[in-house]
Amino acid sequence: MNTEEFRKHAHELVDWMADYFENVEKLPVLPNVKPGDILNQLPEKAPEKAESFEAIFKDFKDVIMPGITHWESPNFMAYFPANKSKASVLGEMLMSTLGSQCMIWLTSPAAAELEEQVMNWLCDMLGLPNTYTGVIQDTASTATLCAILTAREKATGYSVNEKGFDLQKFTVYASEQIHSSIEKAVKIAGIGAAQFRQIPVDDAFAMIPDALSTQIEEDIKAGFKPICVISAIGTTSTTAIDPVSEISDICKKHNIWHHVDAAYAGTALVLPEMRWMSEGVEDADSFVFNPHKWMFTNFDCTAYFVKDPVALVNTFTITPDYLKTSVDEEVKNYRDWGIPLGRRFRALKLWFVIREMGIEGIQEKIRKHIAFGKWLEGEIASHPDFELMAPVPMNTVCFRFTGADSDKLDELNEQIMTTINESGKLFFTQTKLHGKFTLRLAFGNTNLEAYHVENAWKLIQETAKAL
Ligand SMILES: *Cc1c(COP(=O)(O)O)cnc(C)c1O
Image 1: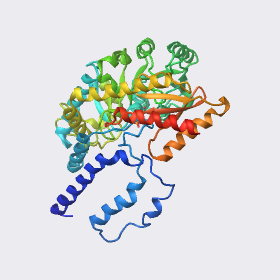
Image 2: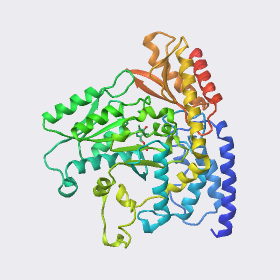
Image 3: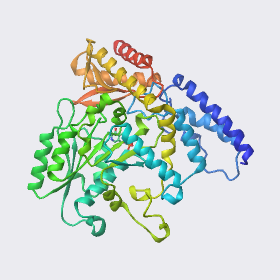
Image 4: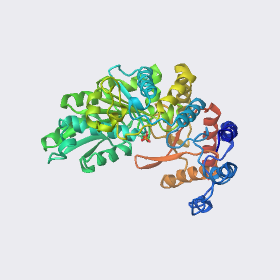
């Protein structure tokens, strides 16, 4: 493809992209495909000869698009959103054009320095203490793994990195409601899933600090070395909020690393009125949240903040001769701030988003999403045939239909969900609370309006009635 052809096709694609944004709401959120439907349309062998861009783009539209789940639709209310904005898409276009690989300062000085400053902005925007230093990671899973590895190394004077494990057994703690990425990180870090302690939660699904304290003391008595506690601001199931401040106190008493997982709900801290959730975060050791979930920055982009960047860098540093530069003493070489050597220029899209929306623009949307959550909470609480299954601090609502024989409710609720998801009008997912099948709506799409949430609620009521 020569430059003139590139120019032509790029313009066509941008037109397609604008149309997509315009029309996505009308598309079925979940595609109507069966396993293998797409695979069977793809040639078994890669083409020997070059193909025209027209042919490739045609297949994108005819073969790939019918198998796409539309995360960009405001009717996508499953999992957590991975929302985006047009500014972030434009930023991503420039990122891929530059193709910068930002492993060290020298491999793109502007990327390293923009990352540093955008992380300072975010720290400020969320009301995090200025004792935190930020770095961009690919996902929250990676950031949490970094936290556990740093905790392990700090607790052992960096000896596991050097000598491997001795006979000492480490323990890691989180609530029963914690995200699966934490158990995965415990396994990868060599701690062993058997040494992962899941602490009971209260009626609001938040960790019970006394139970944490007791478990830590028992473990110490039994010869374990507790190294890390992970608390959640916004668990995945219900956006429950652990008592960060009390957990910080327990960690300080026993000299344990406290990592705060705010992967989803961290974005809500742009609102001063939501900062009650992060009380005590100044006494934690690290904090992670995903601009790629709720802060209008397309996947992937995770913000990881640490209080002791020296411990982080000591855990991950490697300096082979071929990467040494004359400015290493003066700059941040982010390859030492995480797991992969190579790094994308993610700061660029984040910078675009923050500038194009402004802090006020971001606050306005987040405030609106939370108000929709409150509205739906009220609707469900006052409906005779539905019950709320968890508190609704933000925009994730867990509830179930109760207007039938109690022994059929799990099945009925599942049927409501499946029927609606198959219709393509809405896509949402389930969770299990108190052993019961629970409907769960999480809405944080960039273009979400009140009528999307009202329509979803209407659809659920009508479907329940019809079954
Ligand atoms: C989504 C989520 C994660 C994992 O995020 P990734 O960026 O996909 O790794 C971790 N913790 C919580 C609470 C989450 O909601």
